[in-house]
Image 1 (tube, helix red, strand yellow):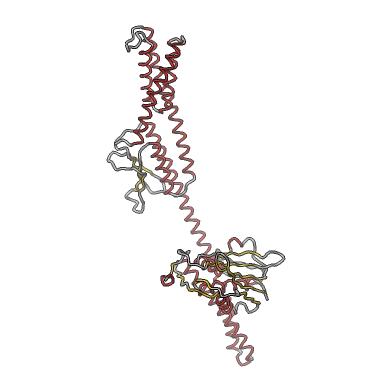
Image 2: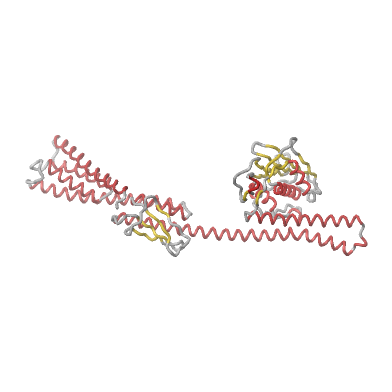
Length: 484
């Protein structure tokens, strides 16, 4: 079964041969009328043979053009004219030498043209494969190239030893017992087999060489993709190990600090209870309560981050009043804001937004806690909400030292520790801001951070939540009851 692309190529080559012989014959007749000798006429036919060999990229069709040109010269110019007989010995020599020269020149030019074309094609394939690192893209690019240069559809299928591999093929592929097989072998990548749907048709030596070189380039590209993939896995494992160590160090500090304070305050009450006044006992109890709340908040952040990482967080959207969200967040963060001055700016009109109220309050508490932690002693914090074209924007502003430019791009990436000369109080895992980002994106919104414009100082956090439900959420699943 011959592929339609190859049939079309054969027709084009035949038409090229016929047109070349006709045009060179007409031009030779015109030249002969002008008094040109037979030797000059043969040069015109020779040029036609070279042109046909270059255009068709085939030695066979170059030879066919040579034979047809000899017959045309014999018919129109050799004595007797308009006959294929040759009675003149000189004309016979001309015909023989012309045929030999035409065959040699046509074969050489065709091969040079073919080699040049093959080199250009391989250069183009190498350039395309050099830019790819994904195995699927490499295989698809290789199949398209092989189908284009060979004129036959192809298929790549994994070996039986690779149960996870998937087959791929170009349009028009058909199974046949005599289809050509090319193994795709790599040192690290899984072995595959390329099947070319020739249906038993023969391919020239040059074509087979080109296909072999293409398959070799694809194998090299697959090996390179395998090495790149392994390197990425190693890098991710190293990064994961680094993040795990950073998390353990940060969590050990965040957990040890409140526990140490709780243990110390409780020990003082137990040991010196008789010597302490009621006010001193109350102050120690407040310290215990505050540190316990800090410890509880740290554990809650760890649990929330685990749920977000495992994509187990579910939204329960209900219309929530923005004013209630602000006051609830301020109430829950009162322990962290004990030394700060908090100002709430709620919308003048009643404003509601369809959100998971518990999660949004948690995000606002994290923003307030972060502002109090890094704003310095007696810092002023403003928490506000306003309606925008995209939804409701919550804004948390403090008058602290602001955010360092080097950590601003990775502020919401988590596992961020920062000490700016304020001792243990300034340290933290950065989980709170990471959870804020996840909650905002779960609602289809976003969160940003920036420093205030001079002469003011401090940081500004903006969390935008759309006022309409999104069909898809980042890392979440919609609660079916919320969509009714």
